[in-house]
Amino acid sequence: MRNFFIPAVVAASIYFSATVSGQNLIHVDDNTATPGSSVEVTVRLDNSAAVQGYQCALSWDSNIFTFDQASTSGLDIEDQLDPFQVEFFTSINDDQFAPGIGWAACAAIFDFSPPFGGQTLAPGINISIVRFQFQTAADNALVGSCSAITPVNNMGHPVIQNILTIDGISNSPDLEAGNICFTDSPPFIRGDSNDDGSLNLADAIFLIGYYFAGGSPPPCRASANSNGDAVVDIGDVIFVINHQFLAGPQPGAPYPSCGADPAGEAGIGCELFSHCP
Image 1 (cartoon, rainbow, N blue to C red):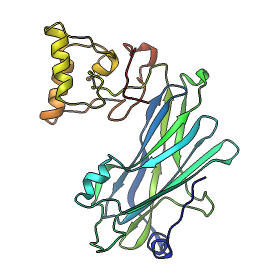
Image 2 (cartoon, one colour):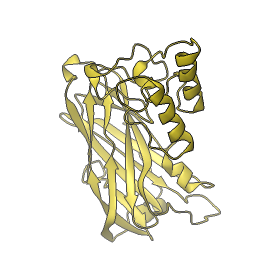
Image 3 (cartoon, helix red, strand yellow):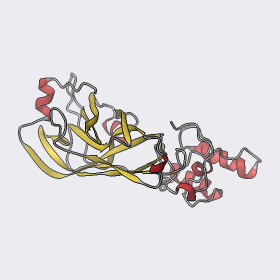
Image 4 (tube, helix red, strand yellow):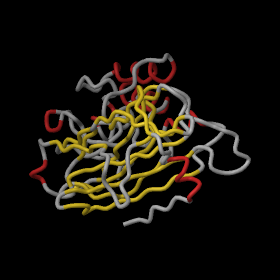
């Protein structure tokens, strides 16, 4: 179990004596996984007021998931705080908090170091604030089932709550779980047809070369199916260009993080995708 240390002055700012409720929500994204693979779980925030920091605590079925790490790297919160950053971040976990129950928590403060500029996370909707990564059990019996990753209060030693710090006061947000559903599909990123780890213009060029210039076929047909219609065709090129340059919709799951095909065996298949764990 990792140490979770917060200096007294920080604890005072996070655990304020008065806790109020507001129009705020911490919610967990759904995702898919294959048994035995790594899976990313993104936690998002809807906040109606500027936030100075947060605590987030989750629980899960420890027979299925084993905690790996928690991070804010590459998430919306970094863009929202720019040119500042998350100045303090720490996490703790206990994979056997109780029989069959795993638990982890993290804390983030946005203005922790001098010169104390007072930076906050502005009000917003669906902002990704932390990513938890888990290893899943290598049990093929999981295929076709789903298991919840649930924000929880009143767990931990000491007890840790899901809290937002707003104007120096702890705010207790509403909480919403996410489900990890298991399929036979290997993990991939939808829209990343050339298997380089990201969706961009190169993917549209790759597909054009495949269709019209005798280029190599996509190593993972499911990833090339950017519009999710179970057919790899010129429509996927148009979808990528619309998303990248014309504010079109983003691809469906699994995107933007690695995940399995929600269609499972009913999907179009993915023989090889090298940029997912």
